[in-house]
Image 1 (cartoon, rainbow, N blue to C red):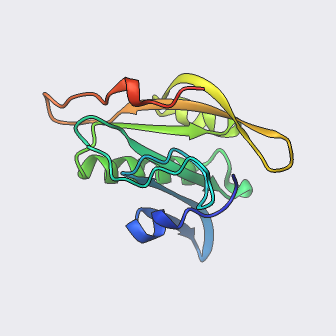
Image 2 (spheres, rainbow, N blue to C red; image 1 turned 60 degrees about the vertical axis):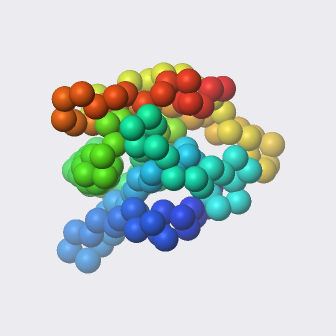
Image 3 (cartoon, rainbow, N blue to C red; image 1 turned 135 degrees about the horizontal axis):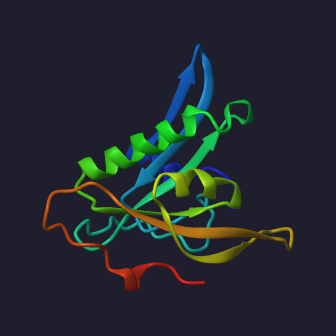
Length: 151
């Protein structure tokens, strides 16, 4: 599960925030089906989504532990949301680790359900599937909820 998703780099939708030469946050979004995971994830879905029916994915928001609870995570998340909205998406969704849930809840993300991802060492990673509408023009359709991943 942990590792790099190079599709975000190829799509130019992964960003780094620096403060006085120090990387304080990174994160991205994509218009593809993969919710979380690295290049080697078994359930990759690299097809580009229909923005009228599906939600963009917020992906891999990381914050330097020395900056946790401060501005970098919120700013990175907002940057990704604005980029997805600029592409025409009306909704975003994510698979959050438990430590990220408070940040996303403060930004109006709603928990839909929880599931676990099996790790190579026999352990599992709890994941919280969360969604949020983006500010859009009137008349934009919500994504097809039947396409949201289920446990």
